[in-house]
Length: 175
Image 1 (tube, rainbow, N blue to C red):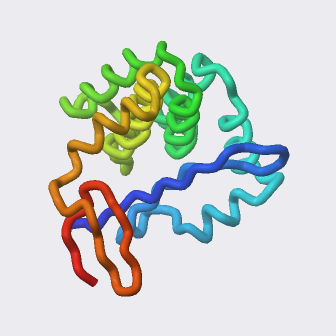
Image 2 (image 1 turned 90 degrees about the horizontal axis):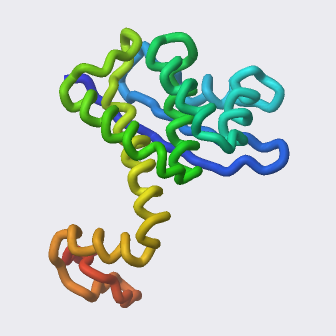
């Protein structure tokens, strides 16, 4: 079985800085390694310019075509993932239907992606869009109160050596 992991790094574009979402598969020699990504995102490089353009975009109507182009192999796959992350940040309610349709296609196995890519890599970004839309509609506290009951039962107090912290529903663990 191939070992896999996803790393998601987000930042906000301010001035000349660039933000990025990076997904890395551990144990897959066909994937770019972090140091290569880091080098290509230096200021003034085409990759950094693309990241800055995606993160500065304010209209989801301009970001969805980037996602579709990435899935069709007409632009780097990571550009599509980053565009989805930006769509989440924008909280545009018109994206909800697209997210549901794409999730359904991924679950049914009908979403086509470039060779060597995994459509499952889109799920965290699609879920981020859903969460951000829920935050915009319900508010943070309402969303949090709906998530907390899903955390497994545990003690309400967690004792660690030299520290007593009051945690809500943290599993009972002793260090």
